[in-house]
Every structure is written in structure tokens, then in C-alpha cells.
Image 1 (cartoon, rainbow, N blue to C red):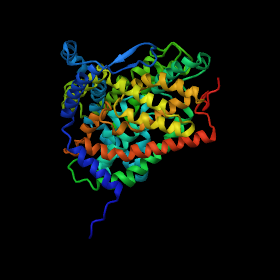
Image 2 (image 1 turned 60 degrees about the vertical axis):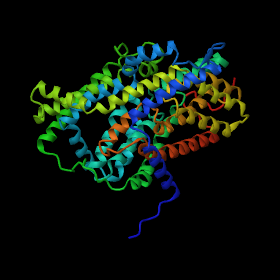
Image 3 (image 1 turned 90 degrees about the vertical axis):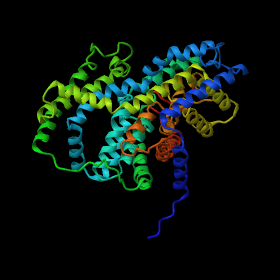
Image 4 (image 1 turned 180 degrees about the horizontal axis):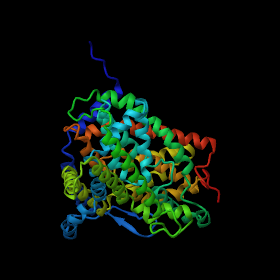
Length: 512
């Protein structure tokens, strides 16, 4: 049978994969990038390139030379802190301690088999993408939990596990700014937007709230879930083909002891969730915030900052109960062994964390990210556009900057004081500017190797394909990024044309 000729789009993805896979191992690549930052800082600093720090009038920022005497001292004295302080390191290891027990006792395997045997196969992709989108309420934990679970589910169904991993990763990262609930992201970005709006109109800013985008992001969940499902089943999965690796789960029915274990694990989960909620919902709860209204006290609270250990515990306790019921745990030595085995499996990620941590720290210390962002902002200011073309240009510039600066809060802290006042002076609300930013920021997360969780996604994928490289992952995720960005942007344009508020007290037009 003649081999079907690939179209231009699929050939382009193949070329991206081929070029990307010629790159070194991710750990080596981050080491090279760190060295490149050092060399560029030394080359650019004598040129006197400087910018005014957004939000700090009169404060000039210039590129730092990290290869002079002071810079070399920084390199050596900060190396340990850069490694330990790499944002995903503690999140991943702590979460995996809890998940590891649940996985190695057989709880996750039993849940997966029960899950895939109880619902129609045609809804699994949709459910996985939706779960990824909703995981942003748990901050970054979704990056650690859902991609490996997605791979396991697809493998259990005889589908390509990397398609399941990609679908979950797309939901978690590409859909990070969509949710049916308010999350820490709304509070974090909202406060920055309010502060930026106060530069132009303090009275207007005083009446703004962190739920300013809630209606739009809630509807976005359904739009992105459909797009993510379509991309997975029509583009990504056919391109990957059939899986010929060794990691395959068999769809076997649950034994009586497993069902009993699941029941008791379910009881433990309910108790754990209730206890967790009691830490934040009552008025004087220990993990509830003390400032603002009731919603703000929950969204911006110690509880939201503690979600990673809470999630680890919520996984650990049911895993422990399941293991005790099914006799896969007979003593504390078994628990310690299972946790140790989990940490041993994270060796590749730990190596990646060391080199990636150095690169991120050097890039920030050199101020090159800030300078790049300010020049991008000046470019937008110089182009005299209004209306939808202006919003589109802002989205494209933000998407481009996102490839270089992964942190949503860092970028918005830099961009909000510049763009929010500009847009207000052109008649567009801070709420609209923030939503346009969130669309661009989320959509290109999944194709940026500089995104802090990119390394661990590669580590998860290498379980199923040892040759998985940066190029393969990027080429797999490009369709999600492209269609998320296009679909989400079209949705915003329609929203603007219909004049629908973005959320409670979230107008599209700024009226002084």
C-alpha cells in the first residue's frame, strides 16, 4: 500500500522535530544557554544599553556584566542557591513524595483501570484536557500530576501515551489562564493590574477587583477543552502513530481486594479534603487570609500558598490507606522504600534542575530579560494602532516575550506599568489589557523551552520514548499553541464586538 503523502503542516512539524532533536540533551542545552548569557552580558554591558525601569520613574536599569570580578563572585556564591531556588524543584519533589506512594501501592493503577472501564472512550481526551485546564486552581501542581497520568491513561487504552501526555500538558500549561474558579493567578495578576491602573486613575483602580476576568476565563474552559481535544485526536495522535514501546497498561478488571482498597482510599480522600477545607473556609481558619472581602481572603491566602504540600498529603494518605488494605504496605519500611524509589526515578529531573536553575538566575541577574521586555513595549508604543489591530499586536508581542521570560508574574510585573496606562489612554480598560496578556502568556507556554516545567515534561516523556528531545516535544505541542492562540484570540475579538463584560466590574472600555 502506498504511503500517504504528508501535507505542508505535518511536514513543517517534522522539520521542527528534526531541527530541535539536533539540539543537545536538555541539561547540556541549559548549561550552554547559561554560558551564552554570561558571554552576552560581558559583550553588551560596555555598549551602555539601559532602560527606565517600568513603575520606578527615574530608575535606570542596565545590563550587568557577569564576567567581571563582581559577576564571577556572584556565579560561585549563588550556584547552590540557584539550584535549590529553582522554582519547580521543591514543588516537584514534594508532590512526587505523595504521588509516589499512591502510584507504587497500586492505587493510581486501580483508579486508572476503573476510570477507563467506566466511561466511554470518546470522552477521555476531553476529560483529560479539561482536568488540565482546571488544575490551575492548584497553582503548579497540575504540571507534576496530570501529564504522567495522561500518558498512563492513553497507554491503558492502547493509544499513544505521548498523546495523552501532550493533551494533559496542553490543558495544564496552555489553559493556565482559564478556569471555572478563581485562583491564585487571578489574585497575583489582578493586584498588579490594579496598581498599574492607579498610575493613571487611582479612583478607578480602587473600584477594580481580582475577579475582573472571571466570566471570560470561565467560558474559555469549554472553548479550550474542545480545541485541545480536536488537536489531540486530529493532529497529534495521528502524527505520533501507534505506540510500539514497552510501557503498556492492560485493561484488567478490578479484583475484590482492589475495590475494597479504593473504597477506603475514597473515604480517606473525602476526610482529607474536608479537613483541608476547614483550614480555609471558616472565618477564623488558620490558613485563611485576613485582608479584603471573603473571596479575596480565600484566593489570596496561606492556603493557596500551601496547595503543594496539601496535594502531596491528599495523595499520600489515600495511597497509604490503599496499601494497608491491599497489603502492599505492611510496615513503615515499605512506605520509606516506596518514597525512596520515587526519588530515585527523579534523577534526570534533578540534573536538569541544576543547569536550568543557573540559566534562569543568570538571565535575571544580567537584566537582559527586563531590557528585552522594555524594548518590546517601546515598539508597541511607536506603532500607532487602535481597536482590534492594537489588541492583536499586543497579544503577538506578549507571546513572543513569553518565549524568553517564563514567569507570568515576572512578565506582568514588568509589562503592566507600561501597557496598562498606554491602553487606558487609548480608551481600553485595564481588565481588557490583562485578559489579552493572559491569552498570549498561556498559549505559548507549551512551546517555550525556558518555561520552568518544560524540563520535567521531557523527563516524563522519556519514560515512553528514550529518544525524546526538545525538538520532538516542541513539534508535538506547536499545534496546541497555534490553535489555542488563534481560537482564544478570536473568542476575545467576538467578546469585544458583542460588548460583553469580562467579569464582575470588568468593562472593555475605559471611561474616566
